[in-house]
Length: 341
Length: 235
Image 1 (cartoon, chains in turn blue, cyan):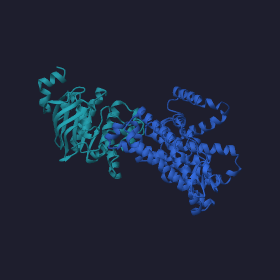
Image 2 (cartoon, rainbow over the protein chains, first blue to last red):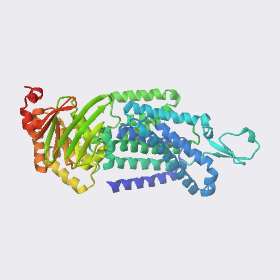
Image 3 (spheres, rainbow over the protein chains, first blue to last red):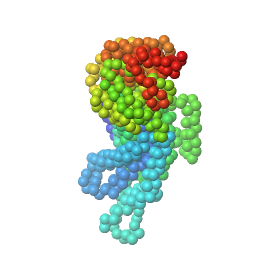
């Protein structure tokens, strides 16, 4: 099974690469939707690791996404002269720059995940949800007040003046000085987005079917029993949290370098809820279900553009109907555990 | 083999266990009986390191294991089958058993032990691919005991194996516990509300009441004791 899934993984990367070559001929509107689908799959699958498989309840995924997103676009604009002179501006140079900012964004989110996770994972259920929600709001408010990344106006690039002053806005006193504007570069494309979709699916599905991964499932099932068996439940909870945060950070980087503009409001409470809805709708702990839910909930708002203010109401209704008719989600928990023997 | 000295366990201001002393010699079956809320489960959880001890010490083969991490205690050879079974209901029987061997690395040994528990509880083998949550109470208890055995413990802690199980199956399970003790020499600390049953298979017994040990003695003598008979055997 190991060999087979590795083969599948590698061949899917090849397919993604080939499709990317033709991405230019895709209608720009569809292209945008497709990229958002990819980003949402990454977000939902990574939250599924925390909420679905490990049975914790995190409501702060947008916070991790914000950290990855903002850190990475700050890096790729403020340090644009450095990156451009070191790696060049060709496709290859851009790829290296992007890998660096991707890893930086993911790692930063993971580190913050560790920082938040260690103290708060002693809490359970609702309390953990409140703590993580509070954390995400703190992140948002901090960003809203940081002038270097545009504060509440959002961030689309940085002006670098001849005297070395860097600012996301035009500086009044320096109007006459020569300046270069470094916009957020559009690094994200079909290849990068779906490369990470493939990576997270490959990683999580292998993890969950391994002996180590069963530790996550056991924590969800019964913590006392897991501890009695000598499973360090705290370690598993923290590692699920940190891994989830890492991929949320990556999703943030991809989002930032596709949208070319980030606003603190992109990462508000509703964004976190949206991701949670994907996980619950798809079925906690079901890989396929969550992916399908992520796709559906990305496409659905496109059809509801005319009534977009009511999107959250529709989400809520969907959830209520779901809880009444299929409390286990589109796909029940057991689907993903079926062994491919 | 397992020595408990002046153990104290507090839940906030409530003192659940007050200075109890307990000794479990190698190869024996020792039982801890008492009514609801006496502190039996707390004592077992403290031995496993799942709850923190407020005072006193727990030593195992001369090593102090008080307040060690649960996974270290399991690795040292003490494993428990928790109260109410607490099997992983979303994992299959086989996966449950493999979770029991979580701290072990020897693949062949795990395989052999899997065969061993299946020979001991053939019923589990029939249900190998079934989800834990779909088993009957008695089967779940067998699974919980087997899962604990998969860690290859030297001391097995059993928390109320008779709880919520059909009387006929209770008998089978207790016979299995004795057989296990005889065939492998494993040391067993058995916590039970069903005092009669527990004393009938144990070598030595302790009676726990509201956090204190009020009586102890050889199991057959305890079973004859007036006070015990009155309080726990319904006479």
